Length: 354
Ligand code: SF4
Image (cartoon, rainbow, N blue to C red; front, side, top):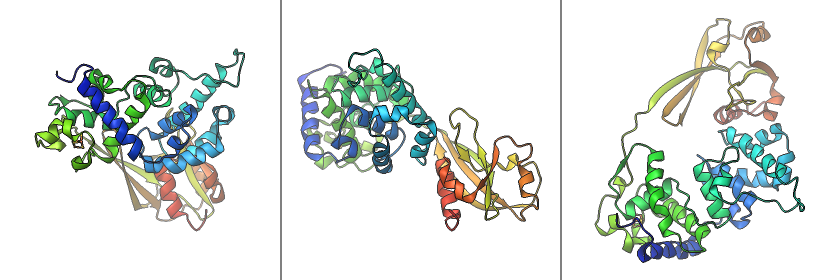
């Protein structure tokens, strides 16, 4: 492979990206104050979540938990509440555990206020919730270590530059392939800027649809541009088959109280959601009132929400024998942590009561 070594052309691409990034980067709160703690928080929040969604959460979070020490001493409820609406709550729990572990490791040190963060990807990966991408991103971007972090943007840019024909089964396989070449572009001492630059190029210029090639700082070196190839062909992925799934939920509300369910799976422990229709043991006529669509991994999920045609007289009896069902006064709903799609729907539905 022509690209599989550290040659002057690859390094030149790296420098072009860094120069472009320094002039064109977006102003983001975790770049304005690029401490390791801020980067740690932003990397957790940005997993599977768009930058625009993360910004307000990041600002609120760093106001409430401005340092790793303060985060480590917060309660799980405070942490989950601050995360509410961002989804994938295991990220919040793992970030909390990671903060505690980093602080706990300082106990034996002579200078406890000088927190020692892990440095290499291998060290970062020892902490809860830190996988291969996040470990490399933290080592590279927060600590300027000469390693490459590979996300979807990086895969897309490198596949287009070299018009890589390999069809990947999934993202994991693509990361493995690109990992072999990504390190060869990192200019010495510019790892942090280079890694952000290639991701920023993918987000702003080398977009998955309609890339802005005329404005691309590396278009002279891009094979798919120079050979007028179809950009949408890179990266190539084998076709994914999505599974459709319907979930039936019930909204039981009498203008004062609402029935919600406390989830018990590890991933969503201590998060509340609308109960499943099957959670209600008493049979009653219901009508459909809404549909919530969302996609997780390879599933398209439609949540169909019902309400009782007539509220049962003994409303509270519905709670019998149903583990996890709880009755909440409406004024309490804003204080508990709800799954993101359900919070959004309930806020719209209960706007006059909350
Ligand atoms: S020239 Fe176009 S396809 Fe090539 S890297 Fe730049 S934006 Fe992407």
